[in-house]
Image (cartoon, rainbow, N blue to C red; front, side):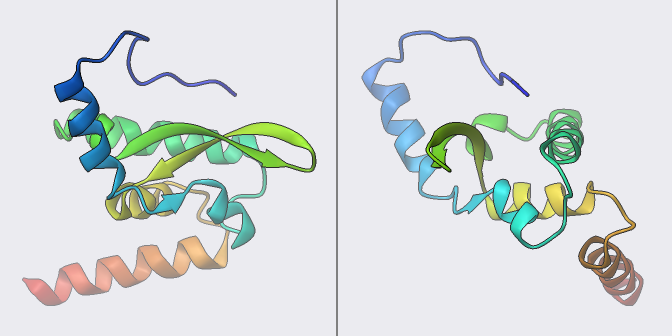
Length: 118
């Protein structure tokens, strides 16, 4: 699975500084959801990531500040993963398969909280 957010290009020092500030907020890894059994496979995780990025794009939320492709060692190989902001991680969970208890619980909890806010 290979997804690209922006084109490969040389970043100016200012862009690098802005990236480093955004990186501070990227505190989760997408693969963490697999360890919590929120996604059963990398394909399922990829679908949830695509949906989460579509939500951000639709709402004009900068992807660069919420998603970053990284490569991490796993079982002696380098595998693609994503660093995520807390909001991106919650969107990832919400857009995962609802047959999972963790995902279903979060979806119901979000609806309950939204209804109590009205």
